[in-house]
Image (cartoon, rainbow, N blue to C red):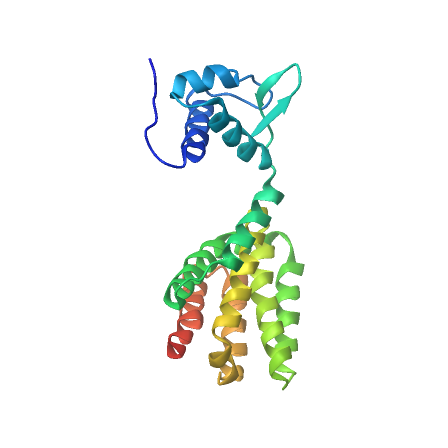
Length: 224
């Protein structure tokens, strides 16, 4: 039975079909896929479209193409995906309200992991506390912005969820977009807010930490 595709940007659609095939057939790294010719026939597209799709999937390590072996399921390269996502974030012109909401979703989402890491490793708290102390000891606006960004990057890093490294670029975009708000910000209040976040996490108070992160980020609505 043919799964013919009738749409522009065929290569992207073919890539989606190939990923679906891998999932539905429960293929694992190293398992073979149909040949390019068979895939082209199955999807009702040209071999060129299939080749473009497999090259794109190969970039992320989803597929592996070797002479004599054909197409096999590869090992996904999460570092490459993270780099790509970061670039996409950095070059996209997102509305500032979406940046605020995105930060809230992502940063509150990592807090449960950060809290668990703090239980396992006291250095996680000490590192974030040290960064926040540095923020409170400088009066230079550029240093303040850099250290503030470092604190929030530290939350991502403390979660130990590797793919979240790509969202460091989201932070950079955010800090650039809201520079005017940062310039006029109440830095003493910001330092206290950071402290409340990490103290709540260390004390196992996840809900309080999430509430404070939301309040901390929503402050930038004033800059809209």
